[in-house]
Image (cartoon, rainbow, N blue to C red):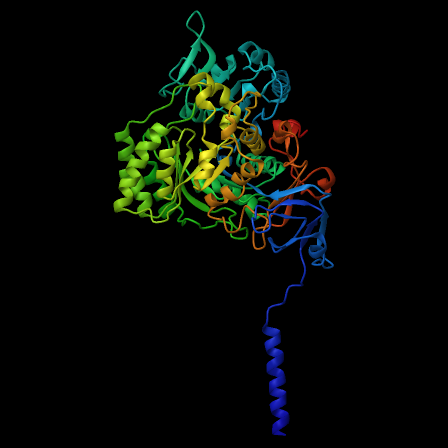
Length: 601
């Protein structure tokens, strides 16, 4: 009897233990892509033809036969049809939250002729309702057009005589029609009083509608035009992310803008909550304040410690790795030391004493609080005093592994590159020279342009290095335009913009948008390569990037973009796999009629 009781108790205990164990997942892959030409970015396994995904991560990479052996009854299997597969592109410096009115804008990105660009304006002006503006806000260059010139004021007047119109070229100049000048109060006290603003005038001394300036002018103008509703802001993020997915982008680092933390993130959170955020979106925060002189660093620390406490590296959307993750302060940390990047004008040089005080008083606070930071500096003349002060600060308040970087740094010297490396900083370059090199040549000469930036030196230096777009205003958000420039040395006009010894191989150029960029998200161990354990972010391209003629590189797009193991974009053979998108808001949005990039519709 005792023996039977013991056996019964053991059986019950064993059964209870089995019941208490978590349910084991079925073996096999969630997704397999095979018959691909995979550029892994992994030096230990540089090439493969297939990969397997489980729970949002890559868990096996290899030949077709081995990977196909991992499928089960529920595995989605995708035939790549021998297409090129690359790691998902990471844009380590972009401004999605600065363009929450994205759906209000006509995008001239990639438009090949000025004639077509003006036709788009005319069509949009006819459908834009009373009370709204016709806008082109950055992302284009006059040098991309076959005509190789700006539109004339007369051409713009004819394209949209009945609605206020603004056509903005980067952060350099804007073209306003008569109704726009009246609405903005040009020539009156209503127009913002900002330094370095210059209106072109006719023979009678009246403003023509062409205005030149720097960043603050164009940010101010944007606040003076009709603003999108919250729903339209959400729709704008959907559209801009869709455009990015189309080029194979799976991760972006938002570098701040008009909508600061925590307000800007509320828009993105709507998509995250509904599992509709189709890109990883770590963010760097920029606190502009409500106007006037403010201490941006103090505002940043107030926002992250009191207003809405958040720690560096904390993810507001933990269901998606690096989904909405705070990566620190920047790119503008103090308006008085912002050197802009208007290549049509001479360099903005900051007084060394002003730069020194900024580091001693403001950067010091960030280092003490262990807040990563990114510093906008374009010109080497400003990098030198910044590094002087940072080296001195490091002696008493050590950086000690804190992640920081220079943003843009187009003219950084070899000496300052070496100094930056010793301090553990990175450089996030951008592709503006691809669009604006012709203007740079007019201002500084071709010889300097051919070495701006020093791509070869920077790659060989071993510093953390990324290429970015700095979209949507300073340049186009299409990363392949920058890749083309790095490889071919040619700007969008077709002119030589990089010396032969300052260009990169196709693999090196792509790496700056993948493995190189992952460092800036503090994710180099899980992003930027097709390798077991890495996040399942990758793109299948419409052509073989590594073998197409040079002049086709800028036209590369994705036909299948996977983020977190899920399809976020599909075209051609994979169009049926693409998730459906709601119609853009408002109903008259240019995105509805032209798409997010030339040729999409």
